[in-house]
Length: 133
Image (cartoon, rainbow, N blue to C red):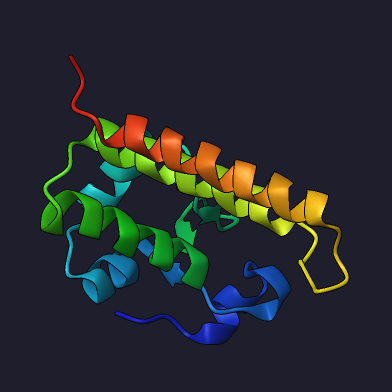
């Protein structure tokens, strides 16, 4: 049951659309209790709340939920493994946002630093993908 968009737009960031938990679950072909459980397991998943305390999911939340579903259901990862991957992806995303774009005018030292960061990121991914002992 979709509620009227005007009921939710005041709660949405910058006027974007939000979806109640039942709507989000239906769109993702999941049950509402699964979304609530994942919220407790994945610190990056923090839905907005309406004035009445209802969970409201943005498109960004839905994207994260799709990624979690893929990691758990399609790739067969454990919750702990999926959490580690998501945290690493978030760390990398934040790090990449802070990088200065490389151009032909960028110094060779900057290229070397970027290469070193890439190597470090790959080593971290390698560690994440190793089975826990």
